[in-house]
Image (cartoon, rainbow, N blue to C red; front, side, top):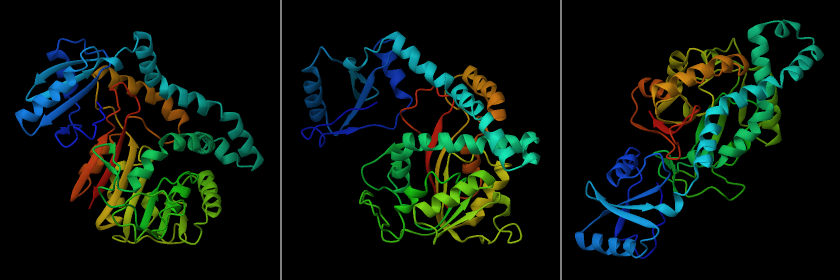
Length: 381
């Protein structure tokens, strides 16, 4: 759904963008094939007079739109955008359905490089350990694919950290708090997001691009980057040094269950000491997710924020899509380290403790054919 509201009409109408289930109902109401791609625009009016004005405007272009009245809303179908051919539609859905297999294939091509790296370092224990080799393979794979994942998601992640995400949508201005204070980055990997976090340091935006943050004056003062994969942790420290965060960024080279254990690493994160937790495509990989998400929850201060951008278990679509995701997870589990496709991270996060506020949602752009659907948003303790 989407429409550009002109200056002449934006004071008279309200664009409804939070009704994911309505479009198919509208198409059925107007007698359309619900498999067609159409832009559905819903308008709620403050008065019948305003509503009639809007309908007059919409009727002025009868070749491109069809108008209906459904459940008290005026409806515009933009048919100029609905001419997508069946072949294009099928190909777009095939891209979504084959996405897991593409990742598996790319990981498979990194097997020779992983073997060479382990032999070069004489790490034969890892080489001949199925679980160890799997983690080493994922670390090398992620060094290649991570920057590409970042490039495709950076705009959305920056908006999330600026407090400009709500209902899965990016907004022009901050709606909630931006990232600040003491931050715990879960699954920091090889440091793909270190340069983004550097923009929030001390409330100073060196690039001059951060927008209208509600708490821009505080900024980040300390970062703990949790990354137990030794290959990724080494690359993470290098990246931290490159972006100039070495004085406030501490790499934590252990699992979540050991972050408060000073005998496991050179430090300790106290319960209730963290202002913000950041998890970007990482909760899919942590062991014992219910237990470890609970541990992370305890580290947050009251009022602390958890910034979430994760791929999750299929919740839309039919049972066949859920079965297909489960099937894809079999080879995925072999070649993608400890990452799991079918993890119900959203349910676990919601149930882990008492939250003052939860704003988690899938992107409105999701079609219902995603085998790797994502959720984005924040939780406030």
